Image 1 (cartoon, rainbow, N blue to C red):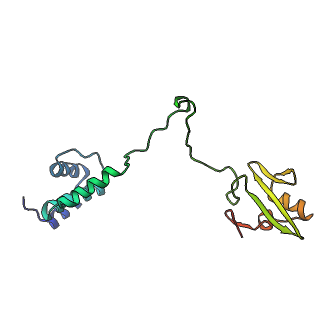
Image 2 (image 1 turned 135 degrees about the horizontal axis):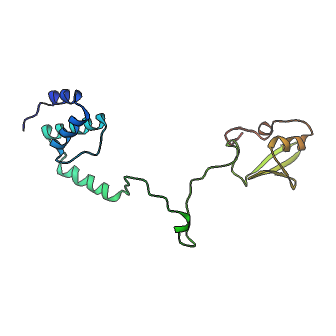
Image 3 (image 1 turned 60 degrees about the vertical axis):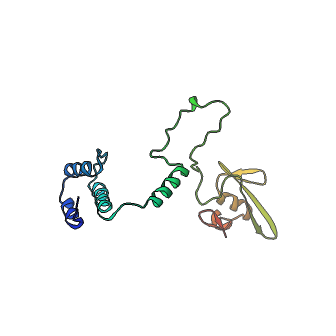
Length: 166
């Protein structure tokens, strides 16, 4: 089967999805699950070139099979199991979505700052900030308690860029 690649590609550009799917069936010997014109065109052009110019060498094909066997490939993401279907004592992995301000480090982190010769330590909690045994709702409230004046809490503790202390 002698193919003129340029003419074949030109003809593919003017085909409808139905015609491309029919052409796909001719070249691959199976139905296509795709209905995307661009995808079908690319796959058919690849096949035309492989038939006209030659396919992968046997060595390259073996290496590709080795790589595919070593890879943990999934076509679809795994289905999520309901919590009731999980056996007791089994670890459940979930997506973590922090509920606190993204500029802050993780809860449990201790912020430290030297202020007027004393080391100030504030622990970040899930629902606030602990300073000297008292819980505050915001870093600004903590900074106010420390200084006695209004301060921006992020500025006072050097938290300017998404949790990076400077």
